[in-house]
Image (cartoon, rainbow, N blue to C red; front, side, top):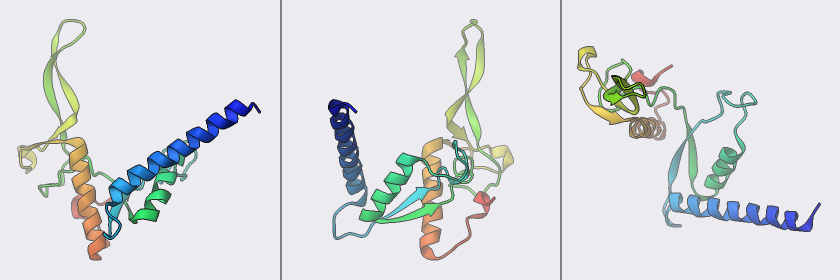
Length: 158
């Protein structure tokens, strides 16, 4: 093996671990505080190449986070599809906007980042960001787990 390649590989590995340490330290906060991080169970459902195996960078991140704080695995089922604020059991729908397509015709196309809670299904009528909505749902699941409630909220159950 070429010595330059070995040095490059070693440097890449050390830079990656240093960057991961900085990110984990920033998440954990000061040394005297106790931090709890809710981590989604990505890859556990067999979505990747090998069924039921966690991806390499995700596993390294959870192991490194476990050194700095307590890591709790949270089931993320339907967290981005259900509204965190209202108790309706219907899914959120994509917000639609009028956009001029390539063929020159103006059509209503869905915006996948913004979801809308429909009033006609008993919802609140608010529009929410998909990622923020999922993060708030995961936070509520984490708070239930820390309070000792093992069941998920009714709207997020499988």
